[in-house]
Image (cartoon, rainbow, N blue to C red; front, side, top):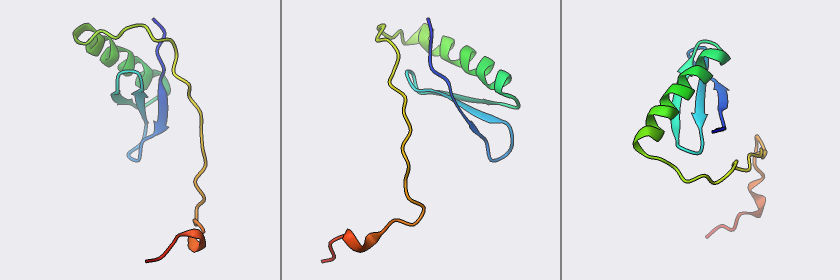
Length: 76
């Protein structure tokens, strides 16, 4: 079964890994370690809470302006 892994840099170093299909999250010092840990955590989760096969999620990105323009916000 193919699953999704979303990795981000952890503040304390290394990587945080998330599987959005199950919500399992883990970490590792390297990308490989984070993915290995996520694979193990997700397999344990699925052994207790099986998921129906729903295919791959749609993963995309979006941008939030660093200084939002608040002039369009209505004030009471």
